[in-house]
Length: 219
Image 1 (cartoon, rainbow, N blue to C red):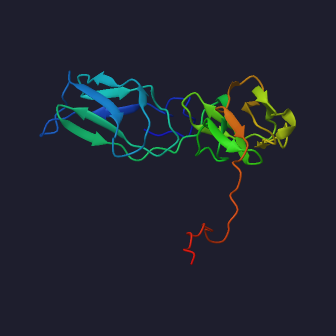
Image 2 (cartoon, rainbow, N blue to C red):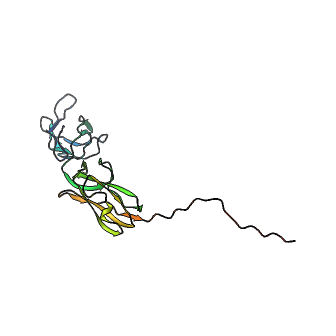
């Protein structure tokens, strides 16, 4: 199989697999299955995954598709025998379906988790597009940012900007909020709850311990 398309689309052309005996004669009527070679890729093959060979020993797998943007091979199995395709991919990401508030610009991160920070500390949020299979599909500069579920002294002005590929939240007072990113009509997944608390008082460094002395005897 081969594909220069996105994960949303089937491979460019049908994949034909033949079954033959040791003398090279075609074997009809046996079932050949397709899946991802488990030593390659991380995704799932979908489409026509099981085909019975015809009288000429041929089986046509169409459509076949794959849901990740990494490089993979397709494994075909019949009667305990396997054949593995040449490498396929990387495919293009699919059409974005959602925007998520994550902690890395290149899609390698995760949704910003629930956490507690001291007042004055900052957290950077990136608006990450994902396709229907969770593949990274961009970090657009026209994303809109705002805070939700705000409590305490957290304010909208604690965000460094309201439009951009990213924003920085710096809580100047105790309180809580979640960070929300929106872009067009895409579904939106906010951050976890970010809680700001007053920093504990610092303990000044100092000299040695001063203790009371024992009473002396009089004479």
